[in-house]
Amino acid sequence: MSQIFTVLGARPQFIKAAPVSRAIAEAGMTEVIAHTGQHFDALMSDVFFEELEIPKPAYNLEINSLGHGAMTGRMLEKLEEAMLAEKPDIVLVYGDTNSTVAGALAAAKLHIPVAHIEAGLRSFNRQMPEEINRVVTDHVSALLFCPTQTAVHNLTQEGIVAGVHATGDVMFDTTIAATERAKGRSTILADLAVQPKRYAVATIHRAENTDDPARFARVVAWLEEAARSIPIVMPVHPRTRKLLTQRGAMPTGLKLIDPIGYLDMAWLVNQSAATFTDSGGLQKEAYFHRVPCVTLRDETEWVETVDAGWNRLWTTSDYAPRRDIPDYGDGRSAITIAEILKAAI
Ligand code: UD1
Image 1 (cartoon, protein in one colour):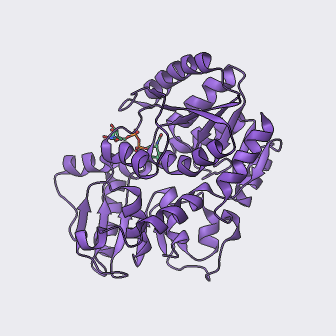
Image 2: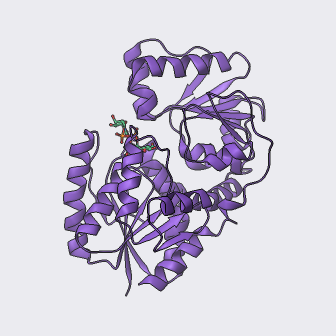
């Protein structure tokens, strides 16, 4: 029986995997999941497996809270062992984290074809660990599933044309399903005592925003200024929580909460008036919910959200005229991907 070996590790990967794992099972393939352990808190990991009904990982590697070299190296070693034991037909990786690049390298060195979901994204900023992870992963992948035409173009520019498929964005599939389930069930607005369309949602976690104290202070000051016009709810990533605690002073005017599950997050964003974030995923989710976004970064991989007037960088003051974005597909991207995987085995 054809077998897919999937590497997951961080929160955005769990979100992307949910519809794909379902489609893989429905297409009659078997899937073995390895969780690297990069994200390990109940609120960063377990809640997503439960809410999104992702199959239980066969391997839990428990590798986390290390520097990039140690983290990626240990993952590489353990994933290679697991792949040698499972002998999969294809290794499937998602996105741009250390778990992604470790899975891709381990498989490529064992001559197992790598399939990359969310291939071709580029920020063109090689200071970002994510950018290095993406470039390396794409260059060792045999199947590259691109969420947008821009991503296809980026790969062409790097000479990658074989195995490239524009499939739409699996996160759109997840958002549709999660919003449907959250509607009428999530009590998050009442729990936080906020009114529909009268608050904004903010998240900050990127190393580029948190590692330099001066930059982090600028981001916090930007949010404090925005909070003078609208109440802001901010689910706080553990990396950011640590920094805020070290810094001593909590931002004023922001409602800081622990990370929340995906259904509550989908509903919180759906009902918000605006989002302020450095997360790639949230920039797109904001568009899926037709909520305007300000990206607290100097560049974005999701350029179509900016071109279509739903997103702007914090370095610019105006949105482009608004329109819809056809690239992200029709909510059936995961099914398309599973069909291509099956045909490739
Ligand atoms: C990682 C990814 C980033 C992705 C993000 C999603 C890399 C290089 N970065 O960044 O691309 O957007 O995940 O959230 O792979 N921590 C906890 N509990 C957890 C998870 C993390 O306490 O469940 C702590 C870690 O111990 C560490 C810090 O948070 O001190 C950062 O975690 P790390 O996995 O290094 O990177 P992220 O910032 O989560």
